[in-house]
Length: 253
Ligand SMILES: C[S@@+](CC[C@H](N)C(=O)[O-])C[C@H]1O[C@@H](n2cnc3c(N)ncnc32)[C@H](O)[C@@H]1O
Image (cartoon, rainbow, N blue to C red; front, side):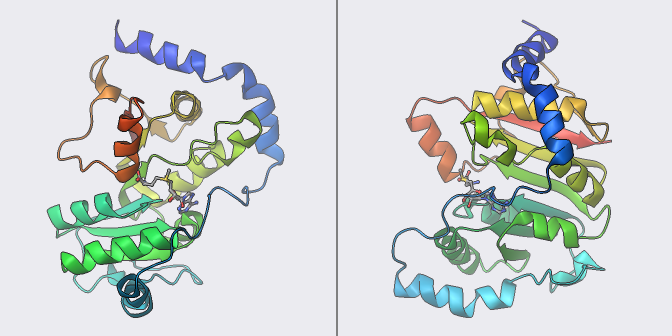
């Protein structure tokens, strides 16, 4: 099987038959209000609560105004900037920041327990190149200056398997336009998912977008994790349940 056969297979499973109604829905739709699940989980330990009240304010992004100079958000000006949308427990964000101290990382997450966990990683690694946003990543995307990002991670976004919830999936045509605005030419959008339905749905949107390219190097391209990949908690859960991850790298044209 070659890459294009694989792509067609995926696109076929995307429910392209729905695209007419999807497109109609998207034309009318404003940004969907709920893309996320729960905000809080188990009760936090005193240590985690203390990280939220003492360390988070120091690292938290303020997006109430447009950000003119994104590199100035960091104590040492980063050479490039990456955004992670929905970082969960922050293990991937922290590993990337540790591996690339010259780069700057902005992580966005709603889930407070995840934010507290990420703060523990950041403190343990004494990472100076991470900034966090507690809330909807779309607010950060709106505030960032054009062409400011070298890359975006969207790792295991909520799959929204029910048909009526699909418009909540992150990679809609509208979100792709917003992502394209803040990505520089050649910037990467790295997307991982364990949901075949979300993979094909998102790929169909990418293939329809005039802002992004997908150039798989071989048929198995999207089954291979990135070099130096730090598996996320959600991925470990998916593998334990027998689901197979897909890894896509899309490029900003
Ligand atoms: C299925 S979890 C995956 C978490 C992590 N990326 C991983 O792989 O372990 C999806 C996460 O995305 C977060 N999320 C969903 N929509 C978001 C948004 N618009 N902005 C920020 N975070 C979001 C959720 O709170 C949730 O923690």
